[in-house]
Image (cartoon, rainbow, N blue to C red):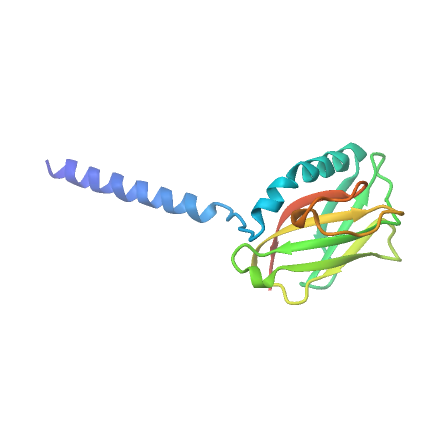
Length: 165
């Protein structure tokens, strides 16, 4: 009888520990005050992501050399050649503190074609959601796709990023 009580107690503790581990590992979703407008414009976001994938470009995010507050983005075409001459914006969303959300301009690194840089003003440690909008020559920068319908020709890439202090 005693072993049954210990077994049931251990099972309950194990299940609680598993649920705690799962909940802490889940990515928090972002709540937007203009959720309806974003929902209405979501087909445009899907189209922008489809256009982005159709280019075959490989967009990779890496740390900017020598800084903890920098972002570097590489853009290569299907053949692996750098894609240069783009303009861009990075929307940095902080799930746990919306007051830290930022819009960061991307500028091309003159010394490395196809490499684009942005700088966080004061990034906090933890999980950030980054949405990168790339604007080819001739396309004027517009509102980021999370805040409305992307303009035709805008390429959109999303990723999650852990920022260290």
